[in-house]
Image (cartoon, rainbow, N blue to C red; front, top):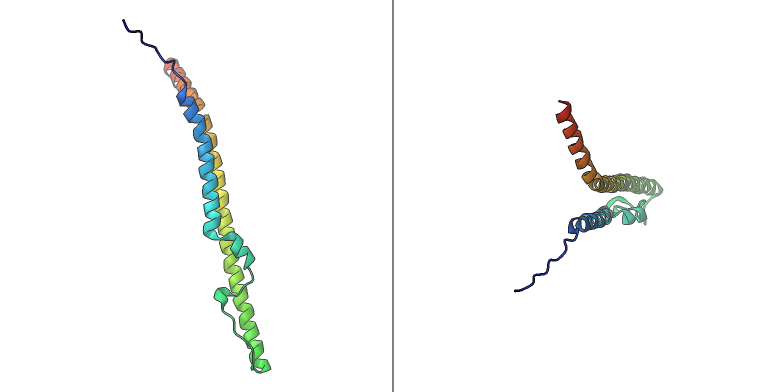
Length: 131
């Protein structure tokens, strides 16, 4: 007669369950990096006071009055660029913070989920017997 060996059951569920938390954090971190790259925040900070769409006029060969008008135009172009870049930077940072907070909250819920299910079952049973 053949002898069969039984393999002891390993708690693969718990191994999977807690390894998935590290994968979730990796995904959140990659989303944060992708968001920072998508909004080009480092580049926007470097070019904060650059003219909008490189729209600048050269003043060579102009009168003093024309140079003043061009200077005002160039200044306004830089201010428009700075405002739009600041808005984009703040929106990108806000979205990055939202991704980080949501990812952390999802990880906390993932950790607490088995306990919440157990508490819900116990609470439901006590409601049935109190009836």
